Amino acid sequence: MTLEETFEKVDAIMEKLSDDSLPLEESFSVYKEGMELLDGCRKIIDDVEKKVTELAENDT
Image 1 (tube, rainbow, N blue to C red):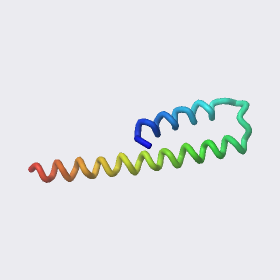
Image 2: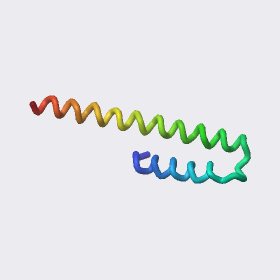
Image 3: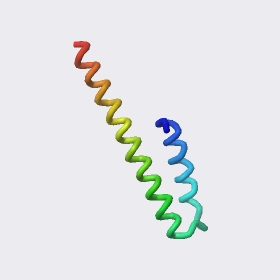
């Protein structure tokens, strides 16, 4: 899954969580899924940041 696809899925989860009729157990499940997706996004962003830093250091 690309970063963009992951963000779209997180947006859908946020909308789902804003629905007051969602049962509590399902809310927890959806919340957990969203947090796992966000952790994956952080890892991708951290990896890209490290690569950019390495490239910048190698150019000097």
